[in-house]
Image (cartoon, rainbow over all chains, first blue to last red; front, side, top):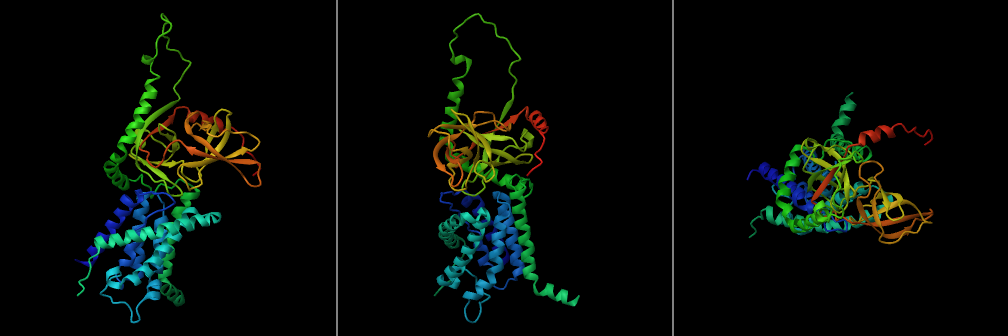
Length: 171
Length: 279
């Protein structure tokens, strides 16, 4: 499949999953599932950062527009997109990334995925909840929300990958 | 000049990031401080359409619960009908008098999108300005108040619910008639709190909390909840009254929008109050 079409489909599926399904799941304790940062890590390794920022911006706006959050999702998605090259460099292989590969769990390995995507999710959630609450005396509540939400969002991302990302043939 | 261009080339990624980030944050903070931004809400045409389709699918999940609620309300209203009273005195003529004018009208609506775990929760309704919904109207359900209309487009309206930061509904604790402002601290969608109640007053637990009807948004006496706990506020002679909402905002579907026919008259009159020079 063409790589552009593939990412457009992922974009639509992720926004739809976020807005129509995950935003409706409310189980208390301040837990919120956010699955759309997955798109950013799955973008090709050689894509320019400016394009990535624009993609993140459009994605954030489309989620914000439907779920009445007024720019919160956009802001946090832009932050992790901007930090993506630095995080990738931090955990990258010694001789750089293979451009033909993709940043999913099957091609880059479980360890790489957990550390890179885990870090991105933590930054994303922290930024999101800090902005949402925006009071210093509620910092503990921000941490509580982040600590509870990150593992669950991560699980949903794994599920999403299992459904929509094709495994390479390993022999 | 060449240095300037070199500077822009060098930091172009950062500049674009800052530009987009400033846009997103300014939308968010303009909204927080001056809640009148009209863009990026679910009252727009496209997202309204998406949410309508979604609601068509999911509204049946709570169907039996909502039917029970409506049936109970029907019973309550039916009990007030003239047919359900026995006539004690015959021979009185019915006179259409002018003592009572209708002040409030109600428009039925259903909630097509709702959240309850965020810091500020908004509901989207399936009616809009075509049905007469305007900004600032009150919204309630059969069990209690819901919120105030925040934006309305032609076919949809966004409601700022009780579960938002600066909602400040003026409420009254029932038998003694104490006034206070109701707030929500962002944690538990089942509980809110009332501020501004002096701690020399005795308040019984589980006494009813109803709307005061001072601002004309809600009629007096709509249910809000019940007093659950009294916490002392540190360093001030005030109670922090914890109330338990009578409505469960997580499963709400059917609501009514209140149209106050005398709102303009009241606003016009209250504009005549001279403003305080201090502050």
